[in-house]
Image (tube, rainbow, N blue to C red; front, top):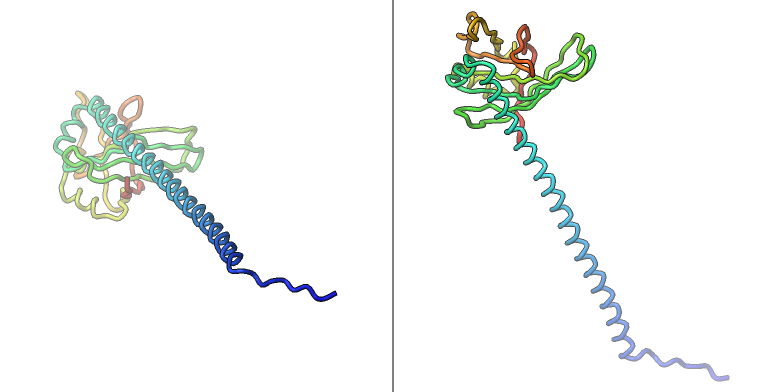
Length: 212
């Protein structure tokens, strides 16, 4: 039989294939665009949620600081008088200790000047001795002299006992601060649920700036 000759593809067939390929490409691009938009929305939601969580933690810390100051004033009128005279007031509302044997303490707070938050800080210290369970206490440090405050603010990590001393206040008869502590440039107060705590030291505590 004579060979079968297939007619060459017509221009119409070529246009059809081209149109079909174009439609597929357009659908793929549409899907790709939608996926990109979805990804951007998802990332935005994650960032927004993270931002809200960070903002909530900051609001909580500010509230805890305010509550700690109120409790401090209730504990000691002498301390309140000193705080009113201080150049700056560093407040760590919840310094937590946990562990048995070699433990540690950590807490976050802020430096207040004229009643306004100037900078947020974290205090960290290691401790050796018998510690059973978790303990929480409040630490308040008053900078009575401007030079002492400026030195603290300039420091990139301020260690008690190395970069500056903190005299821990004790109260005597009538609730007044005992000894020469009242004349020290930096005075510290430590208290828990049962009131002011004595015979303690902040020696070795490392205080560093943090962002909030």
